[in-house]
Image 1 (tube, helix red, strand yellow):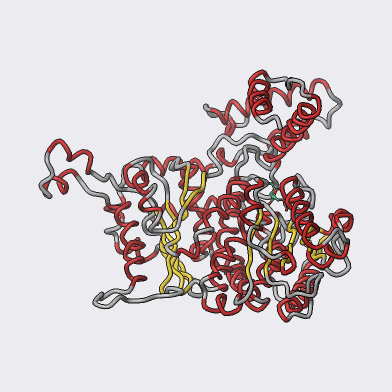
Image 2: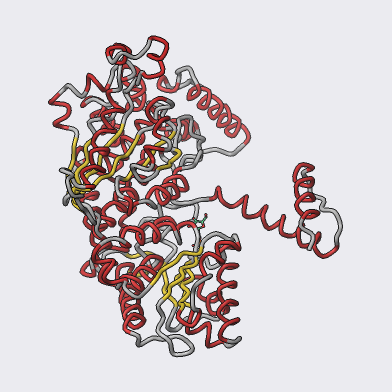
Length: 606
Ligand code: F6P
């Protein structure tokens, strides 16, 4: 079999092709086949790793050159800096502190073309089943589409946008009813405490939004007299912390679970049901009046069996909404609207929708989520930076890093391409973060002097609350933002040994005080942290994740990696049950687990 010249190159990719070709030859010998021409065509059309294409190779080569540059110098190039920003609807992205030149960006756009990035984005928003391992569409953008678009997105005969708006209307009527006192608890009291039970995507997004609105002036006004808590961890201590000072007669429990089978959520939901019964009596009506569900359409029977009134208090979402992309669905709409009112939640949707439109229409070089996604791919796959950090200079965004952690790591923590080939290039960053300036006094030491971790700095022109102390010339927000502007430069430019010496530092200490710099970051500056801005930020990060997945040729919308641990936990529960019932020693197939489990069981005999 002649090797097509473009495959005949050394290295991993070549070995991969070689083995695959040998396999094809074997198949060819062993099977009935379509003839030699078809056989050759099959070889030539075989899916290939993106890392074998010339656009990728060019970027690899280019990365070697970028390795010889320093941001201190790149930042002196005014023309370069003037190009490296993008704006939309008040959001300002500055990426001049990335280790890229204008040429790098051109090469990245060429790779995006090669990967048909635009085509892949369009397929997603049209409702193609791009999550092919679960045979599902990926339509979180439809959750914030205007009502006028009804009829434009159909999946399996369902008019997606019409359904989305039906549920939003239902949420509005229900949450207005609770907030006005028209809908009350079992004993006739007003429902003022909301407990949202859910985990992963059914918790992190809504909590991020809640934390943003908690100190937002409109949020403060609309939440007066109500409270919202999240119960996510299966740890009994989380239940205690959630319920300790709540009056069950005034509590409404929202169970958020797409599948309505997640072990942690179901145990917490049963615990909350028991808690309500313990106070108000074991009556089915207690559950009907104090518990509601947000779940996928296919979970309705389980919701009904649980005792929730599915005719009135079942808020559905669909299989085309992934858990970590579900904050714009009923999963976020119900708890957030109960606390803050539906109007504020709608503003959040509008912000996300504005960013969706930008994402779908702006050219690559002006497109905020596309630029951030391409830079993510560049940093991870070409510069080999394995982690990335989110640093919001806004206390109210303290839960954004945790949300991004799930959004990104559950989406892109993969090794298999869509074509069933194992990737031979790094994908899927480790995401972490912390609100500034807290992070500065925690892990920034490593950011400045340890490993290189690309940083996202997020700041706001105006604070949700600002003040200026008597005698101070700058407001407290100015003080915070001074750090937002200073840190990226400190990371980028660093400090040389000569500069350290010039400060009179003793020779023995000079090395310890040198900052090599050349550490990349980007800055996002928005007008003010409102519900609308939260929507914009959410959409930016959702799309960044998708862009990276599209570029890497992986499916960012399934999460099979969480299954094995779940299955083994069920096995362990079986062992624990036996041990508790029989008082016999635990015996598993793994001696280390056997020993550890017996230690646990023997020391916790009741
Ligand atoms: O962690 C796995 C996962 O399936 C997430 O993707 C999801 O957000 C979370 O569990 C909760 O799932 P559910 O909403 O079905 O309870």
